[in-house]
Length: 55
Image (cartoon, rainbow, N blue to C red; front, side):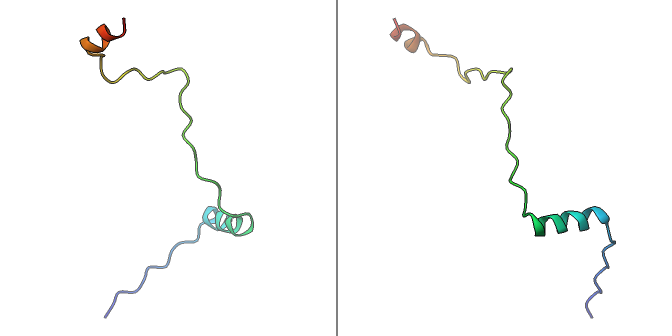
């Protein structure tokens, strides 16, 4: 005999969000904003041959 499903508790927040999704639609996915203060450094140091080749 399968177990009975547990009845989920009513939560106003979930009900409001579901109603908003039905009327307006789902919100756009979040975008990651790059930090402008922190610059990425090179992952590897340039090799001696690359340094000598730049002259």
